[in-house]
Length: 258
Ligand SMILES: [Zn+2]
Ligand SMILES: [Zn+2]
Image (cartoon, rainbow, N blue to C red; front, side):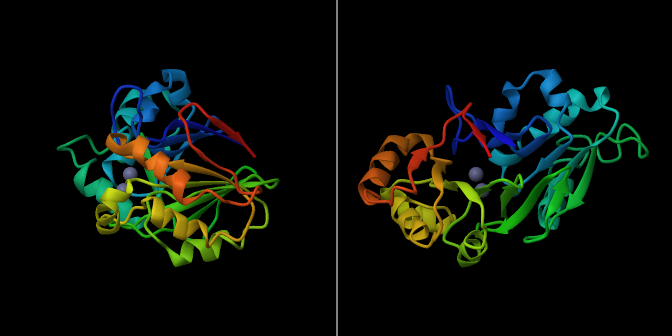
Protein backbone atom coordinates (compact mmCIF):
# COMPACT_ATOMS: atom_id res chain seq x y z
CA UNK A 1 0.00 0.00 0.00
CA UNK A 2 1.21 3.50 -0.60
CA UNK A 3 -0.15 6.85 0.47
CA UNK A 4 0.66 9.83 -1.74
CA UNK A 5 0.25 13.20 -0.06
CA UNK A 6 -1.66 15.53 -2.39
CA UNK A 7 -2.21 18.23 0.20
CA UNK A 8 -1.29 18.67 3.87
CA UNK A 9 -1.66 22.37 4.64
CA UNK A 10 -4.15 23.97 7.00
CA UNK A 11 -4.81 26.65 4.40
CA UNK A 12 -4.28 27.87 0.87
CA UNK A 13 -1.61 29.98 -0.81
CA UNK A 14 1.01 29.54 -3.52
CA UNK A 15 2.38 26.00 -3.34
CA UNK A 16 -0.03 24.99 -0.59
CA UNK A 17 -2.86 22.47 -0.84
CA UNK A 18 -5.38 21.44 1.80
CA UNK A 19 -5.77 17.90 3.04
CA UNK A 20 -6.02 15.15 0.43
CA UNK A 21 -4.17 11.85 0.24
CA UNK A 22 -4.28 9.17 -2.43
CA UNK A 23 -4.17 5.58 -1.18
CA UNK A 24 -2.69 3.48 -4.01
CA UNK A 25 -4.44 4.90 -7.06
CA UNK A 26 -8.10 4.33 -6.30
CA UNK A 27 -8.90 5.58 -2.80
CA UNK A 28 -8.88 9.15 -1.61
CA UNK A 29 -8.53 10.14 2.03
CA UNK A 30 -10.17 13.57 2.27
CA UNK A 31 -10.80 15.78 -0.73
CA UNK A 32 -9.13 19.13 -0.10
CA UNK A 33 -7.57 21.31 -2.77
CA UNK A 34 -4.73 18.79 -3.34
CA UNK A 35 -7.11 16.74 -5.51
CA UNK A 36 -6.90 19.44 -8.19
CA UNK A 37 -3.31 18.43 -9.04
CA UNK A 38 -4.43 15.00 -10.30
CA UNK A 39 -4.94 14.44 -14.02
CA UNK A 40 -8.42 13.64 -15.30
CA UNK A 41 -7.32 10.01 -15.79
CA UNK A 42 -6.03 9.82 -12.22
CA UNK A 43 -9.27 11.31 -10.91
CA UNK A 44 -11.36 8.87 -12.93
CA UNK A 45 -9.60 5.92 -11.23
CA UNK A 46 -10.81 6.99 -7.77
CA UNK A 47 -13.52 4.56 -6.66
CA UNK A 48 -13.80 5.59 -3.02
CA UNK A 49 -13.36 8.71 -0.91
CA UNK A 50 -13.01 8.43 2.87
CA UNK A 51 -13.82 11.72 4.58
CA UNK A 52 -12.66 12.61 8.08
CA UNK A 53 -15.27 15.34 8.52
CA UNK A 54 -17.35 17.98 6.80
CA UNK A 55 -15.09 21.04 7.04
CA UNK A 56 -14.52 22.74 3.71
CA UNK A 57 -10.73 22.31 3.63
CA UNK A 58 -11.32 18.53 3.58
CA UNK A 59 -14.24 18.26 1.14
CA UNK A 60 -13.98 21.23 -1.24
CA UNK A 61 -12.79 19.19 -4.24
CA UNK A 62 -15.55 16.60 -3.92
CA UNK A 63 -18.22 18.40 -5.97
CA UNK A 64 -15.72 19.26 -8.71
CA UNK A 65 -14.33 15.72 -8.74
CA UNK A 66 -17.81 14.26 -9.23
CA UNK A 67 -18.49 16.70 -12.04
CA UNK A 68 -15.10 16.12 -13.70
CA UNK A 69 -15.16 12.33 -13.92
CA UNK A 70 -18.71 11.17 -13.19
CA UNK A 71 -19.58 10.88 -16.85
CA UNK A 72 -16.44 8.86 -17.64
CA UNK A 73 -16.94 6.21 -14.97
CA UNK A 74 -18.98 3.01 -15.12
CA UNK A 75 -19.83 3.08 -11.41
CA UNK A 76 -20.51 5.80 -8.83
CA UNK A 77 -17.73 7.02 -6.54
CA UNK A 78 -18.47 5.83 -3.00
CA UNK A 79 -18.20 8.46 -0.27
CA UNK A 80 -17.40 6.82 3.08
CA UNK A 81 -18.06 9.10 6.04
CA UNK A 82 -19.83 9.43 9.38
CA UNK A 83 -23.59 9.76 9.10
CA UNK A 84 -23.36 13.37 10.34
CA UNK A 85 -20.82 14.18 7.63
CA UNK A 86 -23.02 12.66 4.93
CA UNK A 87 -26.00 14.63 6.26
CA UNK A 88 -23.92 17.81 6.07
CA UNK A 89 -22.95 17.09 2.45
CA UNK A 90 -26.56 16.36 1.48
CA UNK A 91 -28.06 19.38 3.23
CA UNK A 92 -25.41 22.03 2.66
CA UNK A 93 -23.50 21.09 -0.51
CA UNK A 94 -25.13 18.58 -2.87
CA UNK A 95 -28.48 20.30 -2.36
CA UNK A 96 -29.21 21.46 -5.92
CA UNK A 97 -28.37 24.98 -4.78
CA UNK A 98 -24.62 25.03 -4.22
CA UNK A 99 -24.19 21.95 -6.45
CA UNK A 100 -26.35 19.27 -8.07
CA UNK A 101 -27.34 16.25 -5.98
CA UNK A 102 -25.07 13.75 -7.73
CA UNK A 103 -26.37 10.91 -5.53
CA UNK A 104 -29.46 10.89 -7.79
CA UNK A 105 -28.02 12.52 -10.90
CA UNK A 106 -27.66 12.11 -13.81
CA UNK A 107 -30.16 9.36 -12.93
CA UNK A 108 -31.33 7.55 -9.80
CA UNK A 109 -30.17 4.25 -11.31
CA UNK A 110 -26.72 5.48 -12.34
CA UNK A 111 -25.66 8.37 -10.11
CA UNK A 112 -22.15 9.83 -9.97
CA UNK A 113 -21.92 9.43 -6.16
CA UNK A 114 -23.16 7.06 -3.51
CA UNK A 115 -22.84 7.33 0.26
CA UNK A 116 -21.71 4.71 2.74
CA UNK A 117 -21.85 5.35 6.50
CA UNK A 118 -18.79 4.47 8.57
CA UNK A 119 -18.51 4.07 12.33
CA UNK A 120 -15.43 4.41 14.56
CA UNK A 121 -13.82 1.01 15.07
CA UNK A 122 -15.72 -0.67 12.23
CA UNK A 123 -13.32 -1.71 9.45
CA UNK A 124 -14.04 -1.23 5.77
CA UNK A 125 -12.17 -3.76 3.65
CA UNK A 126 -11.27 -2.85 0.08
CA UNK A 127 -9.48 -5.78 -1.51
CA UNK A 128 -6.81 -6.69 1.04
CA UNK A 129 -6.70 -3.18 2.44
CA UNK A 130 -8.30 -2.53 5.79
CA UNK A 131 -9.44 1.01 6.56
CA UNK A 132 -10.79 1.69 10.05
CA UNK A 133 -12.23 4.98 11.31
CA UNK A 134 -10.69 6.10 14.60
CA UNK A 135 -12.11 8.44 17.25
CA UNK A 136 -11.18 12.12 17.06
CA UNK A 137 -12.26 15.20 18.98
CA UNK A 138 -13.15 18.19 16.82
CA UNK A 139 -15.86 20.85 16.60
CA UNK A 140 -17.94 18.68 14.24
CA UNK A 141 -18.23 14.87 14.21
CA UNK A 142 -14.83 13.67 12.96
CA UNK A 143 -12.81 10.50 12.56
CA UNK A 144 -9.19 9.70 11.83
CA UNK A 145 -8.28 6.68 9.72
CA UNK A 146 -6.17 3.60 10.40
CA UNK A 147 -4.96 2.02 7.15
CA UNK A 148 -3.58 -1.52 7.45
CA UNK A 149 -1.95 -3.29 4.50
CA UNK A 150 -1.56 -6.51 6.49
CA UNK A 151 2.18 -5.84 6.67
CA UNK A 152 2.16 -2.43 8.36
CA UNK A 153 -0.20 0.35 9.36
CA UNK A 154 -0.51 4.09 8.96
CA UNK A 155 -2.70 6.25 11.20
CA UNK A 156 -3.95 9.67 10.12
CA UNK A 157 -5.54 11.59 13.00
CA UNK A 158 -7.57 13.97 10.86
CA UNK A 159 -8.37 17.26 12.61
CA UNK A 160 -8.41 16.71 16.34
CA UNK A 161 -7.73 18.22 19.70
CA UNK A 162 -6.61 16.05 22.61
CA UNK A 163 -8.49 12.74 22.44
CA UNK A 164 -8.24 9.88 24.97
CA UNK A 165 -10.11 7.39 22.80
CA UNK A 166 -7.74 7.95 19.88
CA UNK A 167 -4.68 6.83 21.85
CA UNK A 168 -6.48 3.85 23.29
CA UNK A 169 -7.15 2.71 19.72
CA UNK A 170 -3.71 3.62 18.32
CA UNK A 171 -1.80 1.90 21.13
CA UNK A 172 -3.62 -1.34 20.33
CA UNK A 173 -2.26 -1.47 16.75
CA UNK A 174 0.44 -4.14 16.55
CA UNK A 175 2.05 -3.13 13.24
CA UNK A 176 2.09 0.68 13.34
CA UNK A 177 4.71 2.23 11.05
CA UNK A 178 3.50 5.80 10.42
CA UNK A 179 1.52 8.34 12.43
CA UNK A 180 0.32 11.49 10.69
CA UNK A 181 -0.91 13.93 13.35
CA UNK A 182 -2.16 17.45 13.01
CA UNK A 183 -0.70 20.57 14.60
CA UNK A 184 -2.66 23.53 13.28
CA UNK A 185 -1.60 26.47 15.41
CA UNK A 186 1.49 28.05 16.96
CA UNK A 187 1.73 28.52 20.74
CA UNK A 188 0.53 32.12 20.61
CA UNK A 189 -2.75 30.80 19.18
CA UNK A 190 -3.06 27.91 21.63
CA UNK A 191 -6.34 29.39 22.89
CA UNK A 192 -7.67 29.19 19.33
CA UNK A 193 -6.42 25.61 19.02
CA UNK A 194 -8.33 24.73 22.18
CA UNK A 195 -11.49 26.58 21.11
CA UNK A 196 -11.47 25.00 17.63
CA UNK A 197 -10.32 21.55 18.86
CA UNK A 198 -7.02 21.45 17.07
CA UNK A 199 -3.48 21.02 18.41
CA UNK A 200 -0.65 23.50 19.02
CA UNK A 201 2.92 22.35 19.80
CA UNK A 202 2.41 22.02 23.57
CA UNK A 203 -0.82 20.08 23.05
CA UNK A 204 0.99 17.93 20.46
CA UNK A 205 3.69 17.14 23.03
CA UNK A 206 1.00 16.06 25.48
CA UNK A 207 -0.64 13.80 22.90
CA UNK A 208 2.62 12.21 21.70
CA UNK A 209 3.53 11.43 25.31
CA UNK A 210 0.57 9.06 25.22
CA UNK A 211 1.85 7.11 22.21
CA UNK A 212 3.38 3.92 23.54
CA UNK A 213 4.50 2.45 20.20
CA UNK A 214 7.44 3.13 17.90
CA UNK A 215 6.36 4.95 14.74
CA UNK A 216 7.59 7.52 12.24
CA UNK A 217 5.68 10.68 13.07
CA UNK A 218 4.65 13.29 10.52
CA UNK A 219 3.04 16.64 11.33
CA UNK A 220 0.26 17.96 9.08
CA UNK A 221 -2.32 20.77 8.79
CA UNK A 222 -0.11 23.71 9.84
CA UNK A 223 -1.85 27.06 9.37
CA UNK A 224 0.24 28.87 6.73
CA UNK A 225 0.45 32.27 8.46
CA UNK A 226 2.39 30.83 11.41
CA UNK A 227 3.88 27.62 10.03
CA UNK A 228 7.55 28.63 10.54
CA UNK A 229 6.93 29.52 14.20
CA UNK A 230 4.96 26.30 14.70
CA UNK A 231 7.80 24.19 13.26
CA UNK A 232 10.36 25.97 15.47
CA UNK A 233 8.21 25.48 18.57
CA UNK A 234 7.72 21.79 17.83
CA UNK A 235 11.52 21.46 17.63
CA UNK A 236 11.89 23.24 20.95
CA UNK A 237 9.11 21.42 22.82
CA UNK A 238 9.86 17.94 21.47
CA UNK A 239 13.66 17.77 21.46
CA UNK A 240 14.10 14.35 22.96
CA UNK A 241 11.76 11.93 21.27
CA UNK A 242 13.06 8.35 21.37
CA UNK A 243 15.10 7.32 18.31
CA UNK A 244 12.33 4.92 17.27
CA UNK A 245 9.89 7.87 17.06
CA UNK A 246 11.44 10.31 14.59
CA UNK A 247 9.32 13.40 13.90
CA UNK A 248 9.17 15.33 10.63
CA UNK A 249 6.84 17.68 8.81
CA UNK A 250 4.61 16.02 6.25
CA UNK A 251 5.15 17.39 2.74
CA UNK A 252 3.16 17.50 -0.44
CA UNK A 253 4.05 14.81 -3.02
CA UNK A 254 5.58 12.68 -0.27
CA UNK A 255 4.86 8.95 -0.64
CA UNK A 256 4.62 6.66 2.37
CA UNK A 257 4.78 2.91 1.62
CA UNK A 258 3.62 0.35 4.13
ZN1 LIG B 1 -11.74 20.67 10.69
ZN1 LIG C 1 -8.93 20.97 8.50
